[in-house]
Length: 265
Image 1 (spheres, rainbow, N blue to C red):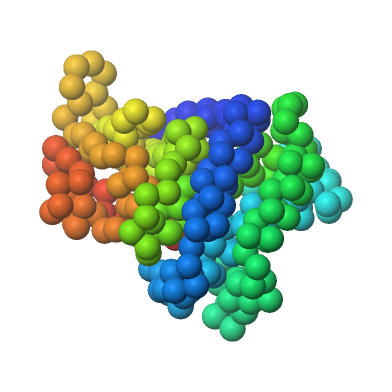
Image 2 (image 1 turned 180 degrees about the vertical axis):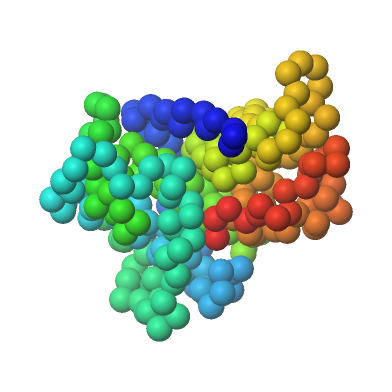
């Protein structure tokens, strides 16, 4: 009999909205200081330059206002839940023939201002966030979609920092939401209780079928930091490399996540 899956984690609408805005502001402030030379530098995202990355970040948040402007999808429940979002996104392959994100938008600061103003006007600061949005991967609750925006903002902030050697800060709530969703996705994808994955201070999940511990220290434990976990889950670093660099500790014969990663690209 397969292991029972736990109830999905709930996220507070107001706190998630605040976290998204805070992380976006950190990126906006960094973009304001970038030089033309920095904007032209390469990133780890294929053929994207830094200017394409920062344009994509703004466009990702702008998708909230764009989707809110569309009619609400019919139906009593969202077609895509939070735990279904990572594999759904992984299935959406970027068209190599599509224009670069920065094409046609040379004034990046103006773009950031427009997106932020629209978000503030369109996304209510209170409420339950139950309004359905017709996103590119299916209809989602507004609050759930805001969690995905927090994930993308945090992941791409790390991409920006890596490309330019910057230290753009991470909002604590945005980092927590990103860490938790990716940890919960792992537990959902490989249900079980034989391995405990710890990402302090934000997440602890059990995964992988096999003998389950009930008390004391579990026999199979993986522990790492939030940013390393995010890089592993999104394919920014490999399991073997993280182990070699002592960025992950793994004890127990089952404490090997290599076959399960990445969760999201």
